[in-house]
View 1 (cartoon, helix red, strand yellow):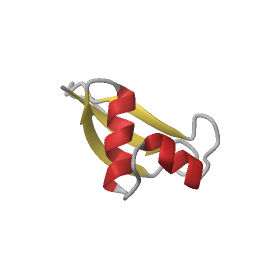
View 2: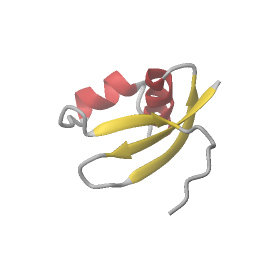
View 3: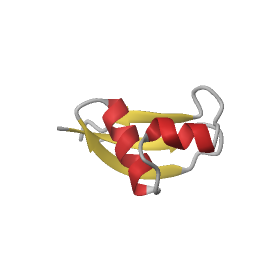
View 4: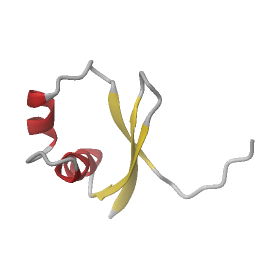
Amino acid sequence: MKTYQIENTISGVIFGNYEGETSWHALDAFARDAGYADYQDACAQVPAQPGEIIAVEVTGEAVEG
């Protein structure tokens, strides 16, 4: 299973890392953790702008800064 970082592209808030076979599975796990049935349910109750909430795969590669 892969790990994805869920974040809000507008506010910059990082919600955490969630596992899933795909980014959509990770978004479902994120939504369930917040008390929703799945990501679709969360979007129906708390609409977001397109591209506002994203799931980026965590590769484990070191980044120099």
